[in-house]
Amino acid sequence: MKQAKKSATAKTTVKTTVKTAAKDASPSRLIDARIKELGDWRGKVLAHVRALIKQADPEVVEEWKWRGVPVWYHDGMICTGETYKGAVKLTFAKGAALGDPKGLFNASLEGNVRRAIDIHEGEEIDADAFKALIRAAIDHNRS
Image 1 (cartoon, rainbow, N blue to C red):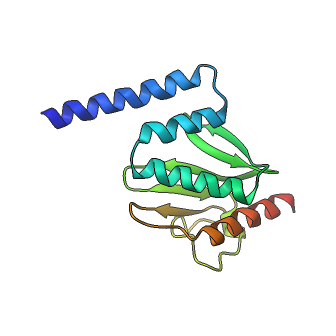
Image 2 (image 1 turned 135 degrees about the horizontal axis):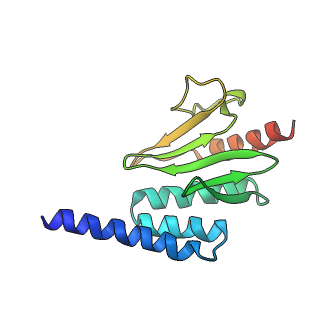
């Protein structure tokens, strides 16, 4: 009973944090709030991949779409950063057109356009390969 009550309280706090941030916040602030509200490994992973995206492209534009999904753009959409109970999913809008020499794509492999990277608790992402994938997505957007 205590666990259910604690879980409901945590969900209310999460919703309140985002609603408070949404009143007059930029997409970047909303992403900050999402990272904070997650408060677990998913927040750390989302913060880490966000930092890698910014390292790969300091001019990246952050957006907040579809009721709470961080999205990164440069000359078109690069990827989204969705969070689920068991994974942080980075979906590349045009991932099927990108080379993936390090095999980072491990989800949504059957589609004709998108590809995704699911990161589960305790997993690491190859930072250099991920940044190269970000740059490849930008190059593809420019072509």
